[in-house]
Length: 393
Ligand code: LCS
Image 1 (cartoon, rainbow, N blue to C red):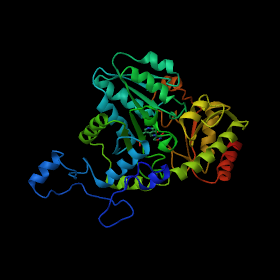
Image 2 (cartoon, rainbow, N blue to C red):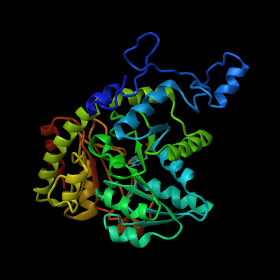
Image 3 (cartoon, rainbow, N blue to C red):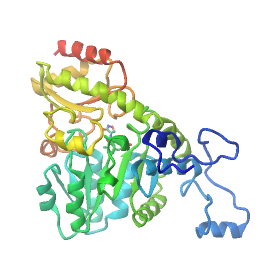
Image 4 (cartoon, rainbow, N blue to C red):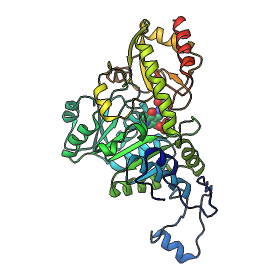
């Protein structure tokens, strides 16, 4: 079925579907590592790419293809690549597009390991990087060097909720022939479409809002242009960070309800953000939907909703924040985000513990920062949970 002109919800349900021989309504799982050839000549033709067919599931698989096509349709990209994890997506992008002597400019408040792997692994191969506050476009201009090949943005950033002007950042980068990559995990294509704003590549941890049920780990890369896609695909196939067919099936199932889930989670989030902003024990709150968010106006133009992630700090700093997190009951103390269940975590000691304290503070990841991923539970229960935890602080 041609899905390009369908609305977003219809795409969530139908994009990527293929005509199954038995008329299965749901995309079947091709749980096979390999596919037989009709004869040797047929095998040679497949490897030469002479016609569409499947060889081996690291290279391609119908169930994985269905997910990749769906994600490309949702992000308005040329084609998608599904991978074993979000970090496999991040490292495939770095590996494919950066070589010895190249330089990358990136948001300082990215997901900890996206920065950690650059410092620990890619630096060994001679890749240079500069981490800056990309909310200030002047910082981007100043960080660009003659050997800069990639601008890697995460917006909203994990965990600070800082928002980068994607369109303006792309204009700056493209003047210098620099590719722009946007980690769109916190928004999903439902709330933000970086490729429409000028980015060249968008990537996701599918583990979060896209799958939405906290039951798989996965990642995806979607490229706007064929040549960039071909390079990424070749790298993924060689490096072996491919997704498994069963994992792809789970994401295809999960993503169908993404808009419904996110609508509910966003509605809860706005109410919780307002509740926190008015609470006497709260020192500060950052949620893109609040007027007090430094990039609230930008969020209104760049995102079609404010999402379901909030960060905040309590009066009394680190000690109060820890006490609070230890006392919430409905919200579970766990890393990850974007599922139907509400999670709470402490980036300085959990997701971003791999950064030095100095790097964290520079990126705005203070020791009191609490990150809250809001689910689809009843708002009264979520507020009650917060109230009872505040009483203990
Ligand atoms: N990008 C972002 C923005 C993320 O939040 C994560 C994971 C990744 C990439 C990596 O994806 P993964 O390999 O885990 O699928 N973020 C996590 C977090 O904040 N807590 O636990 C994982």
